[in-house]
Structure formats: C-alpha cells, structure tokens
Length: 135
Image (cartoon, rainbow, N blue to C red; front, side):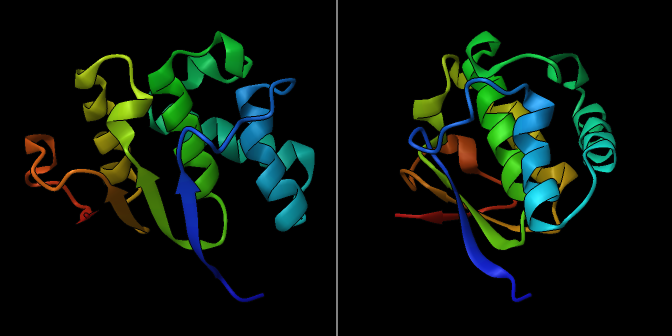
C-alpha cells in the first residue's frame, strides 16, 4: 500500500461524537491496517500515555477541551499512513494561546513525520520549532 501524502488537522476535521478518544484513533488502525480492536486500543493507550494525556482515553469529544481535541486529531493523523501532517491555524483551535506548547511537545515526541503549519509566518510562537511554516 502506497503512503498517502497529507493528513489535515483543522477545525473542520471532526472527531466521531459517539466514540471515545481511544476509539476515534483506533479506528484508523482497525480499518486501514487490519489490526484487532484489542491490539489497536493497546497501541493507542500507549501513545496517549507517552503524551501524558492517558486520562482522556475514555472521554467523548464533547467532554474534551480544545487543546485535547487538537492533540487527539494529531494522534489520529500520526497513526495513519500520511507522510506529512498539516496543521491549519492551530491557534484558532485553542482556547488558551499557551496551550500551543503542549501541541509542539507532541511534534517533538513524534518527530518521525513531517509537520507543516499553515498560519502566519510572523508568529513568534513558531521560533525554533521543528515545523515548516506555510504562508
């Protein structure tokens, strides 16, 4: 199977409302990589723990804050076959501008994928980050 090119993370890419965080992410592994539910949930639980957000694994999207939602969307994109993850205007997806640090920490934890951010190039929060800014 050929790797796809780009996964998009934006406000318009929804999570499935009736599923928990672990199930929202696990679906990618179950349906696209033919892994069992048990194996998929185990992998996702380890990823959530690695990101220090394992406490949200059983929550549904409406129970999450905006920072957690972007992090779940990132993990869902990460486990897919996409070579590049494009994050569209991350600041518009957050309630608190300082929450961007948690998002950048995830990029550092999972630096095997190319991450590109579509946002304003002049934003000082992007200095020294492992990402490419697209105007």
